[in-house]
Image 1 (cartoon, rainbow over the protein chains, first blue to last red):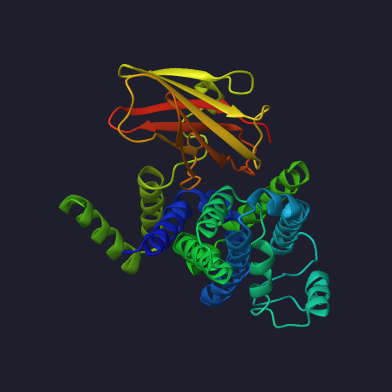
Image 2: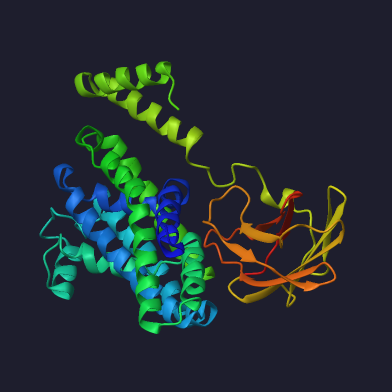
Length: 230
Length: 164
């Protein structure tokens, strides 16, 4: 087995174990927020689209790292954008929590069933002009930029792998491939969280739903504060 | 390896989940989450306050630990040691020398960050150098550890604060 093949396996297993060991805690709240906003039987497709978007962003970043080998320069360049994405994610989770609670007439965003009278829903539809489920793909691409320790670590390794390859085009492909398999590795843990959250019996309990709304708002505030301080 | 007892519990839980009512399902999910927490998911801060584990003032000086008959000295430059910047790692080994160059694995206590290895090259007189990056964790935790592995001798763990 070549060293590159070994790297692919390493990146996948890293993603898999980091998924259960880190992503559930750090990115799980986002997946939970999405899933609570979806119909019980429609959780998987939007989540898969979200992850596809996230993996696409990882792959693009991996390609850039592989080609340039300049981790610090590139991450410094996108630092402001990442800060903005983190604040955006926090605000989105807060709005989803408020919308889900029913305490304010916001309607649901990023769901596959909506209160068509909702202010947020109408605004989002106008803004995006795309069907709700499909919106998870660009959303995943955007949130793939969220600052994340294990993603940074994988990017460092992708940059290092790229530096050892003389052919620039091959370095791009290797960087993309490594980050893509890393992202794929993180999917099972987050899908499991989505599946658990999406269970009908859980969602049918009003009290759990209300508690979920409050937790979402708290998590959203946490994201915003962390984003401002990042 | 799952024991037959664990398999039996999983089977019973599965049957309860499929056939039972809300309470059984909730118990099954509770058991599942408990299993994840105890077997796979290191909860953030599970090892307590990570700052209590700090054993190295890397921001101001180099740090030393004993490993078998060898002193392992770690230094990181430039100072202050900042995350998300190119850092030079230097290991000085005094006494018995290893059969192969040492290497450093960077991580955080109590939080899985993925493998981040700094390979080192010998520059003579027991000095080994390499470059690496300590990444930034959005959780805000700033305590990092460098596991210095010296082949055939063992691993020395340096835990220190990093500036974000």
